[in-house]
Length: 472
Image 1 (spheres, one colour):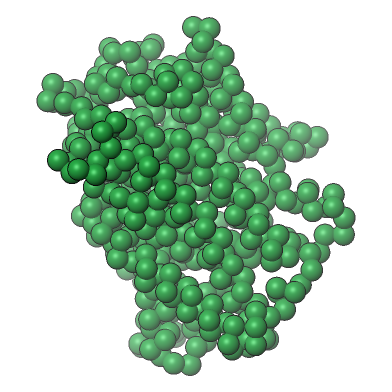
Image 2: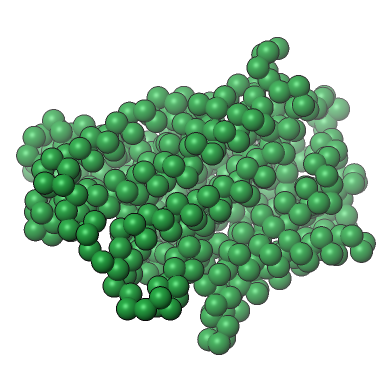
């Protein structure tokens, strides 16, 4: 046995569960010998996910909305420190018991009711999968133009590149989570080097970091700033609200609680802040160099004169998008769809379902403008995903005091059967959290409820679940 593994971790004998319809090899609890991820692997996972084009462009939406550069970076950093709290809390059960998110969520929602939050999470991931694949296809298309300039005249070029990048994702889906771990570990330092390389280029060629770093906020009053800040902060929390749910999918392979916490602490908020700043600084330099602000790194790199630099940079962007897509947008829905029928749908099958739904959701529509992206997409899905985190944390830490009967998570008729496999209290808490948040879209006077969707939804679901479970 690995001597680094935490002695507090639990290994479950699943030999008696072979006949259960609620288990397969992909969602079964990991054995202690399978828990090989150390602090570096967890941190590298976050570097691989955070270093991507949406992160690079994230500050763009905030600056376009009126913030100056430091207000935008501060908002992004604060949002990520906030989401780090449920991230680490939900990761605990994955590390201790070796269970993935769809199994963990069976404890509060029931063995069958767990499919409700699992599929909600999966569908959001499908949307993100489509967005990242579309962006990765754009980088791949620009890379092809560098090698074959005539490709730029081919009208179907972007769509073919999109299809090729989609197939690259499918390759790693078929090869499973271990291939994703290896890709993340190899890519993380390379991606950070490329980011710093862009930063050095911007500083040298732009004669400093340019006018955006000295551009004042466009808000005339403090009230105007706060009116924009809080919805924006909710959007930043929503950016990784998805992973705050299914983080057990990864930490189930961690060697200890300490390593998963340190890996997340150093990997998530600091990488997001750093890469967002790189996006701001490099874009500010483009105003000096090219006479216009170029927020899209694909368009920026295509303007470089040295073909080898363009080629390497586009390759880096493609890898960055691939690593983010696989970790953030494939593992969760693959396990979620597998949880629907564990005996019939494997991890690979669930991943392929994700890949096809991602195309059907037309990701190019979600990226048309910053307001739809931040205030529609990010806040919209956080309103019904964050309440799931409220229920999970309330159940695991308040109701069950971090004690789970793992065998019953994989069998019908156990302590997590509730009423026919569904816990109506958890479902009602989830629905209430989402309703309170989304009612702000229907009643203009209550718009603040939607602007604070993540916080309102989490608090409502958390309190309702604790009250109802303690009274039952």
